[in-house]
Length: 304
Image (cartoon, rainbow, N blue to C red; front, side, top):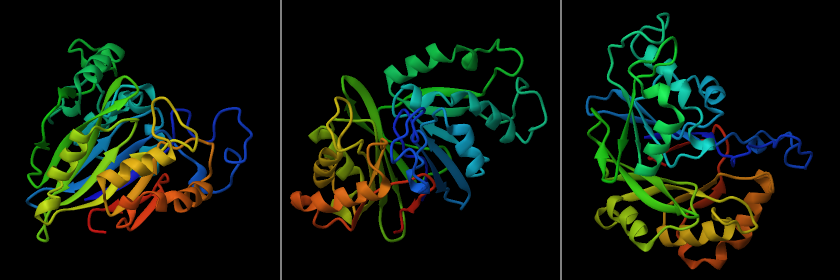
């Protein structure tokens, strides 16, 4: 299982429009942060590739071109805020590409099933409200995308994979219910998991227990990577700040921890230094191999 960070920035992205701060003017490529999204490559039982997208924000078109994305078999949506769903319109292109009809009109009938979008009930309702033309059978011109929204509350397998279990993890983003995603791959050496938990300022004990249970930690499983919301140093009403992200990570565990949804308040280098300075305050992190800020284009795998 391979995860590529398409974007690691907050809702404004970095650089922020009109800002002349040190980070926004930085020439370090790791300080260029698009809106949050991740692209995951899985394998089926017969060794075919399947590709899962977590969130699809307004920077998705540029991200897809940068990473040469040609296939999306499912979308996992954390919640229905603009920076996580306003690239949904670009799924129209994948309806054509994946039907081997890239030159045909986008409203033609396709020979592939709809691209499923898995999310919670509030987000599903908002999707249909914001993008009614994408779900209408009467859509004209290039307005039709073959997608379906599935309200998901239980663990499941993407069709045809059979070896990667996906578990929705309930979280809170202020008063809003958001969904983290845990992907657990069956391997010859035991279960290997990646948890993706962004846009949250509260993860319940029950959700933490669910992550540990589904990662099969008591049965030889490994939570190889924990991706977690870590906005900035200063506290925020709907996101973990750096210290809160460290505290949550100490409770969840994981061999490697990656902060995402980062603002322009700290550079990549400054964020890494802050984490290193404060991680010793949380004894639960002693066994964690590395804790670092993620960056756009970073690739991690369940094998390392």
